[in-house]
Length: 567
Ligand code: ARG
Image 1: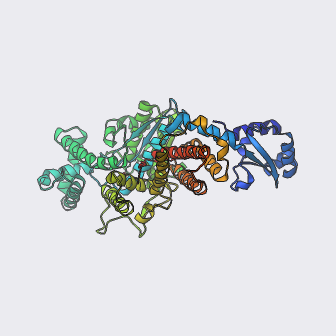
Image 2: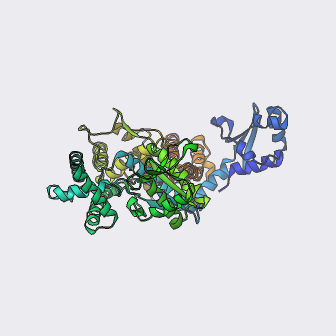
Image 3: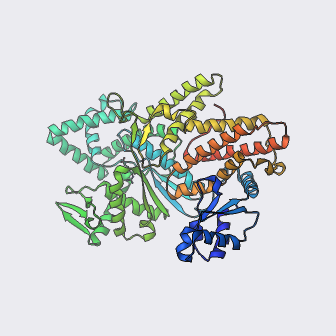
């Protein structure tokens, strides 16, 4: 695609001899100031002239094709550029015509692998709302990187290892028959866990038995392994319901247990590095010089830690996937863990290309309007129930608004899930998320359902006309009014937006962009009658509508939101 900014920068470079002049170019927030602007006061020191004079000088010497820039203005030391919207429009249309749903994609990531560790709930424990965020954010990043041509490996680093399994095995041995873990694995296993934990507090010998079970599990004892496998399988079956509702997939389910036989090497390497020291019976890496508490590698009782398993996972992922970036999506509560981890990883003897590209992508908490997210009984909300509630609430709204709609169930699912996903991805991820049904299901707010509703509008227009007019017959001169051009300009930057969102690992950049597109479409639609007497004008407007629908659908797809055709 024509890169207007680059072309302007090239010409400016010739005149100013400033190599990195492109970095100076701004996009004015005020549309009156043109499409691009060069603030010349930034050059004043270097050129030893007043900004206004510099701007005039440059303008004088510049030689930019009419096809790129139609007007250059000097205003208060700024040099403002107005781009030629005709080639902008035709390039956009040609690009969308050629690429369709792939418009905005690229081969930036060719032959590069991105590993994304996300969701990663703990076996036999409730899948809580923090895991929902990780699943949604990680799921979006997965799609975004794929769209940019990367090979992406989605890893569910399950918490399937640890002394709690020794306890669960003991509890199950004693009372397994009393609980229906097949039917309701997480709830029932949680009950067993609480009960055995209480018993452990009363009776030291029970605790000893639990420890022993865990040891046996580590040594591969068949009975303990079988029970562990059962707990894992049943938990996954329950988690899978959430993944299916959200449409999230993983390429690897290697959890913490997968690394149980791979930690020896980590400890050996760290020992050889001379940095592994004894502290109160434990083996730790001191991180004083980085102002962090030590990273515990082996506890005083000889067991390994969450961090040790993560170190083994880094080695494994570097060797297996040869990653360009390894991303970890968790709540901000684990910021310290990952800082320590990434520091210690430098001692593993891996190539810098791996240890320099370990990236923690933290996110904020979820809060309801009234404060915490728990049910009235104080229990943690089950995600499956929450997603089902989103669907039933959407179904109710659809029933009120459009009772005769076909496939209501299917649509309610898209709307409900879309609302939850969009709400999760609407703000910079580190901000706390406010979970409020009325806000996220509002069809007129900055919400998932609003995007879907605007998409449905484009869709019904396109359905009405039946066949899309061929691009060769479109007169782009008929789309040069302000509302149309604003929409066209915004659509032009879709590819750039997707790249930015990957660079920062921030899906919200796409969410906000899509809201913008939807609002610009709404203005275009309100100001221009699409179905009109003049066939040429109608065709041009229909084509623009078509382009909008492609971008809305593709962009929402990158977030994990599906578009209904009707609603
Ligand atoms: N299971 C962990 C938790 O629930 C998250 C794991 C994140 N991934 C990792 N490689 N540490 O808190």
